[in-house]
Length: 556
Image (tube, rainbow, N blue to C red; front, side):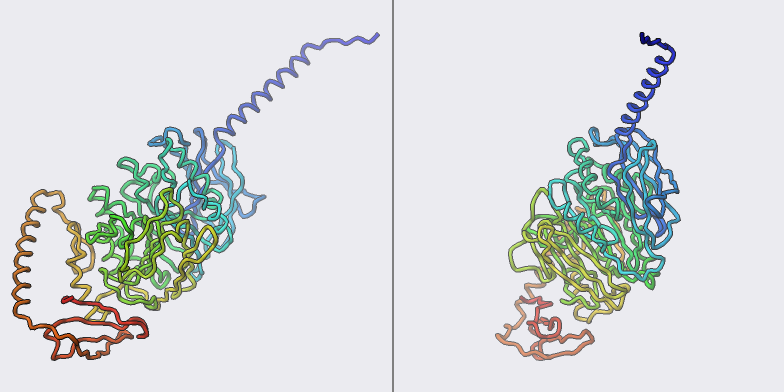
């Protein structure tokens, strides 16, 4: 007869071991849910050998990063900092993590894995820059991208072709990050992870980042070079170098926050940064600035860029001209518009070979839930070279820097890959732009336009800088200005009336003298006998094969 003897100590040990394993498994599962890194994204650090990695977790967890030159041997570690983010984020992930990796070898592929409480995400990788500035980087450029669009998968596919160095998102994220208690922000960061975890995702703030009186989601969810984290409200601007390019990211929103100190701080920083950038133009000859709201646009709305007294234009146009910024990338308008090189609304050329002013491009149609915005009816402004509305919706820019003198831009459709616009900028003479380099007639016209485009809160001083009006807060000063302007208008009307009465009738036809000047073009002016009647001038555009375009007409 077979009998079994019950061994209580052994059974108790087995049950206790099973209990411990179950507790450990449950604890690990709970830890995994709380600490699994999500929303992983990169940005450049303060120098070429640094990279910043950010992620979010559901719970309060540690912040560590494993990395190395092989996906099988990530034998280096870096620790970072975390922040609890609750403002306008009651339902979103509230624990954000940031690690900066330093002393990275040049021209290398770095594999990395974010870790929180020993819970790691999947491995990612990125490439470091070469030591030499002699490289040909490429960038994806876009603005106004929301979670409601279907373009993000196409963006990811394009970005991972291996042709790009970084992405530039020129304001307006998610629409809007603070919506649904911050859950829309989480959704957006998850959507961009498949590209932002492999390529630096460089940003500038837009008007949709304003939550109340702060930019809370922008300040916490992103980290940019040259500033602390979370990004301070009065330091949402930065710069960085990639190959032959010095990039400058600025905040157009400072002009709409009613905080004069932020305008002053950014202005002073821009002067300092652009001064240093011009001293290094042998290494980075190209200077490219990007910010959300445009200085000029011809959209059919009442945006700041459509007005004569544009706040953004008054705060930035003179700076960018005087410090020789080559290209200004903007968004905000849900369409596409490319401008001719111009200053104060005066077109300086209709080609892009050695342009004598910054080239401005508006690419704000990556995918907004508000659809596209149409343009003002014809005639198209002289300074607007190309403008596309409906066909440009769900589109992005491709920027390639071929070398020190050639830059290529394309605006492309996410939907079918159609090239909407293509532009080659050739600049052999990088440096500060100066009115003295222009033909006298054109330079004078720009000077004459200064009072028209001059903002009430700024003034152009001899250096070309923009000086903040110290009496902005005074209620008496605007009244005095208004009275003075009224008197001046009355005097001007009287003078014009007297001049018209004394002026002879203008002849029906005019004779023109041709004058040569060093601008590769021909200028026409009235003959001396007819100069009394008007001071019109006409300029042959481009190579002279196109019709002449009126530059100045005080009489018509």
